[in-house]
Image 1: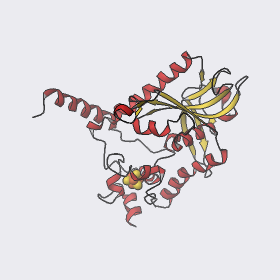
Image 2: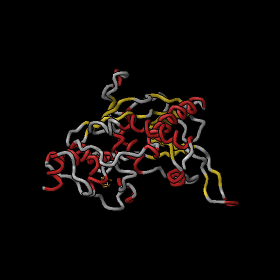
Image 3: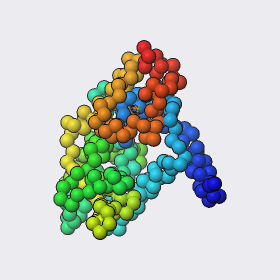
Image 4: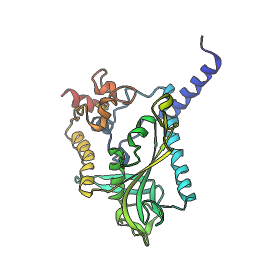
Length: 289
Ligand code: SF4
């Protein structure tokens, strides 16, 4: 029989999950952080379809999200304590798709790295990512900078967006990558990865410890960024034409090579797979013709 402490923890997780998820994923709008999301899920969200597979309390999804959020503040504090300037924190920016849609984002900030440091003499568009063991092992490399593609897309979009934040009236409609930082050149994107767990590789005597933080710099390809935005037009077009995009190819990055297609990771899994009927009549018509 389960002991009392176990049951108390389940109650807390359950209640915290109910509070955190009662609004589901809110009303759909194009947002930068969703650029790598599954277009089929996004389109169902655009129709206003509720979740068929809400997250279970035991997963603690909101706790994990909050840990990532807290991590950003701590990283920014650590950067500043190291003499690295951080500006434009949580600044609102907006990109425009080729179809004319506005895509809103809030960037973590820009970092200005002093000359005497590695990557010094430049400023970068920065985003902090808290990484579980699997992601951290994939991005960690002492010799090659290999950020995750979806993080490059998100930062690339911030860099090519214009500033719309009322806290920065003097910078209104200035493109982020056109910002001028006295004495520093623009250096592209920077992803700062922080390992949520103790970062290691291997087992037993062969176990290797990795540093807790890893930084990946990359150049931003302006033409590619324009293409990244197409997903938002695709969602809007599908909605207007009473259609839904098909299930992406199993290797497509938006479904993590197929892993995302499960009720553990996709909140509309059962509707997508046809296991339950959509609640939204327009989506029902779109799916069944
Ligand atoms: S189950 Fe997979 S393909 Fe379907 S909506 Fe979810 S992530 Fe997309």
